[in-house]
Image (cartoon, rainbow, N blue to C red):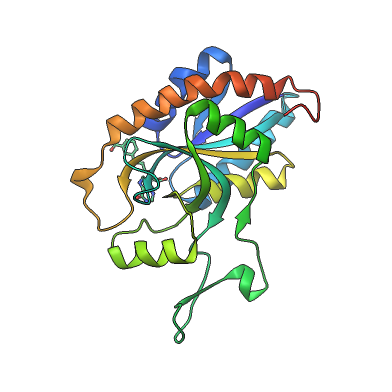
Length: 225
Ligand SMILES: O=C(O)c1cccc(C(=O)CC[C@H]2O[C@@H](n3cnc4c(=O)[nH]cnc43)[C@H](O)[C@@H]2O)c1
């Protein structure tokens, strides 16, 4: 079965496609944020099924903010967990001014990529493996960066689409991965410090090393990886 890679914007799509298109892996720009990612990823999965070419894996990919020092600018991360970090409610009292929908008892905030596949992809890419957060509002202050890091120990990075792509993949019963190249630190907003070209180059290089693993996954005998 084939693989679908989804990115937010066309520059990310082109960076991934430079490595994936020669291998016949589809790469789509589905828009920024979890809602656009969920809607358009689900539509692409439906098209694949209708065309009798169902996808067997969804990969959310692109650039991201990295939590220093775990994920420096220019590094690549692979998600061990895809976490909806701001899906919940603010709370007026207590040390933690946020509670998740999972804690409130009416939703899920974590998707778990296939462990052996995520490990194999991280190893091939020379990437760190750990939680990657999905946010609807990019972090722009040191205070919020510290709160997120406290609430999600070991979090490597934040981006804005992974959880949406994972929700779509779950609806279609397809496994999901998230692969990100770090363009900026999570913290006080300074767009001039974003190293987008460096991160896009890192993304292309990472997918060059990941493609053979995805090929092996496509051809796998269940239990192989
Ligand atoms: O301006 C450009 O040339 C350009 C090229 C490629 C990508 C972009 C984006 O702005 C991508 C937005 C996308 O990146 C993720 N992202 C990156 N850093 C963060 C962050 O610190 N916090 C949250 N998300 C981040 C996110 O997935 C965005 O959708 C521009």
